[in-house]
Image (cartoon, rainbow, N blue to C red; front, side, top):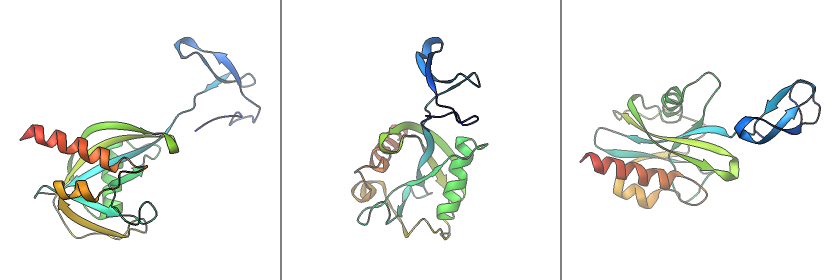
Length: 168
């Protein structure tokens, strides 16, 4: 979120030096600093017991390609809780375990995106107003099917495949 005015008193913010952070936005009336922090949105490869990846069709993101499961972190939730919640909400799959892979910064929307692998036992799909379809596919096939333009699904999938190949 980028601040211009104090969220408490509505006065314009000025710049003031603070420690090693340099000049930051400051409310002289309230005596508080404000930092332009990105929103946080998890990005998850969902992998079943057959080592198939679950891709989501979300037409509002891409009409031709598939994407990975993603979702915003809510106040009070950890990253891990967010992965478990988003995977269940968007796909109906229950996460058995998960691991952190890497984070990404998505500049167009000022998002920090921690990337995970969520391990599940494939089950029936749930229904979500955000998802237009699902497909389980091999990791190799997924590389061809996933969106790579203006989206980190492809990059995260590649990083997860690289990590999984180190295990084998």
